[in-house]
View 1 (tube, rainbow, N blue to C red):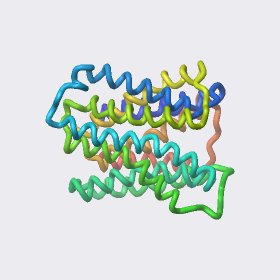
View 2: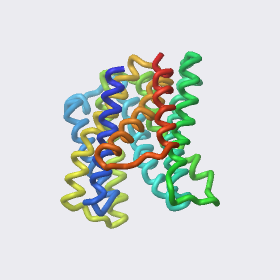
View 3: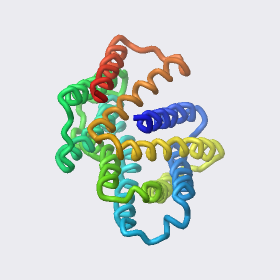
View 4: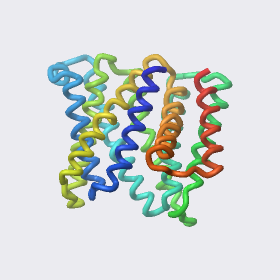
Length: 280
């Protein structure tokens, strides 16, 4: 549980830094590209240059799953942007967070993980809380929403986590950093291509925030993978998702002086209950 908590804190730090960067950066894709550059470099040195290029019986698994994960990481971000244009803000934000359904369902069906009754109840409460806290946002609603795009976002958002679970089950624990290297390398190459196509300039602020965001982004992914070694996915992914919501929301209250509605306070209370049940 310790590693999962650390992963939540790093992921929340990532969200907070991105929020701060909104005042300074002009190209969101450019910042994302620099983030992936940083993640790739950190993963490369964390794994050790020799390990990345040294033959290993499970290296093909790490490369294959890493490439798919890289496509999913960047694809979910780009699809979120497209969904916001087509469906407004509320539904895409909700469906992206509900991506936790994908790795959780895969763990139950494929790997036969059997959550306890209280964990199932906690999972349901967490899903309801996610829907509730996002439904309170104003603006961007589109009554003529495109459900296909939303479902695709949900699946793609959860696909990267599924690859992490697959690597935990089928890959080698010695190649955790190598697996992350191939995820971020793939996302980096693709994102640089998208940035060039959009003709977004990579300026000083994009480089600065991209690099400082990349470190917590990498560490968050790494600690979640470590947590999967000792905890079932049906606990890790729901706890990670709602835990990040709690930390980021509290940071919004303290750092950005945001105000919460009664509905959001209710949702946070539900999340606290869900966290307790998920970890019993």
